[in-house]
Image 1: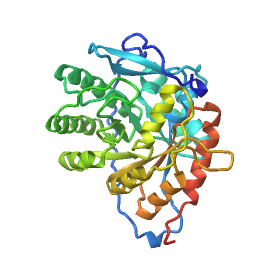
Image 2: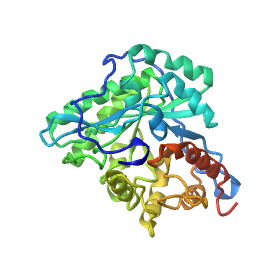
Image 3: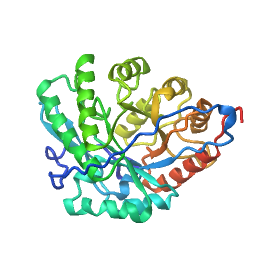
Image 4: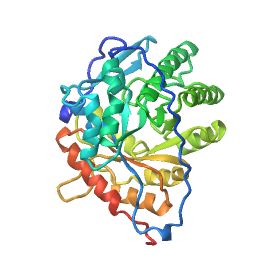
Length: 351
């Protein structure tokens, strides 16, 4: 069993996500900020907005299931968090502020597991703490080659876009393929994926949120596949670049998760660093994935200092979301705070 209570489990009952299945779309318009790269020699430190990924404090948010499609084609779930809830939805803004941050990314589970009454008090809690919901993640994939399955998944995505708007989120994120720790599905054709994303863009725009895509599976983790897709869909689709969802980092983390152990440090993660460099010009948001730190201060699994130098040298000025991907719940808080310190201290090589 993995540390911190995160471990693979036998699938639970199909669709076990809970919560009220009705939502009212609030027409909250959000204007995305255009990214203009500065000259690196004009910056002495990184002044990017730093966000918190609620996924990094998942042990505080209670039991969590990830839905996926079994080989039979039916939806089922795998439980990925087993700890009891110690933090309610309306307490997340204050918890975010406790890290010295003013924006948080939510997982769909934080909204679908809440009642309509619990969701209704979230905007007031955000206002009290002067914290925003920057993004809500939809965990069900939207690019299944099976037409019926994809249509079912898109109905779910439409509902989550409505919930994201209700939570006053600025963005909503989608994934093409399931997470790599559940059975894969056959991807739809390039043309169908493009059409599907354009349809979701229209839905998101009508709800007042911006649609984002993350590199989170073998398809989108490959810059040679991801870049043409972004080009074909157009600028209405934003990219969330996750520094840990690139090979060989992603495979090492997934293997550790499935075997219930801490991942070993990689001797050579150059392909990941090269992919980060290649994708940064397209990124609208960057997930700084941290797996914690060794007692001597070195980052676990891959070289986080090197990642931050690459980001700083690129001139990227967009948001940086800290996502704790380690398995030790007790280390989450210190890892998040340490990563924020490293971000604030990072500077371009030319500074």
